[in-house]
Image 1 (cartoon, rainbow, N blue to C red):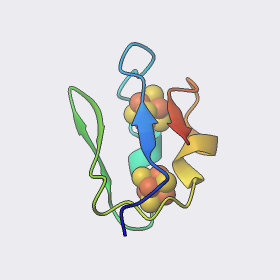
Image 2 (image 1 turned 30 degrees about the vertical axis):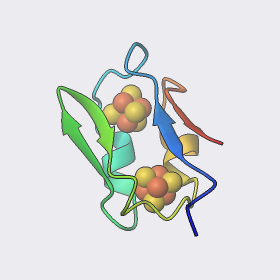
Image 3 (image 1 turned 120 degrees about the vertical axis):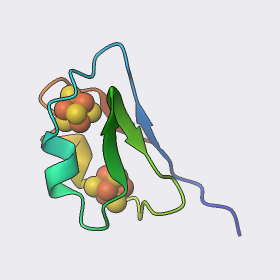
Image 4 (image 1 turned 90 degrees about the vertical axis):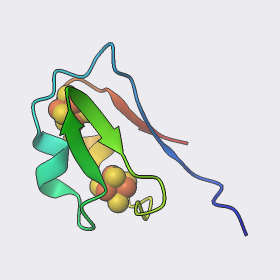
Length: 60
Ligand code: SF4
Ligand code: SF4
């Protein structure tokens, strides 16, 4: 079954600070000039959403 939730990163807001990368339990995030998420690895835990100081990450 396809995943219904997905992490979206607003690259306009992302400052590539790396805070989300540090907290992701499955290492689904990496910085590649801006933050990128590997949707296949992400378990939709929502930790990074709360951690981002710029409010650049959403989970919907
Ligand atoms: S929602 Fe959880 S698993 Fe997915 S990228 Fe954010 S911290 Fe990682
Ligand atoms: S915590 Fe937010 S601003 Fe920092 S790298 Fe992640 S998405 Fe970008």
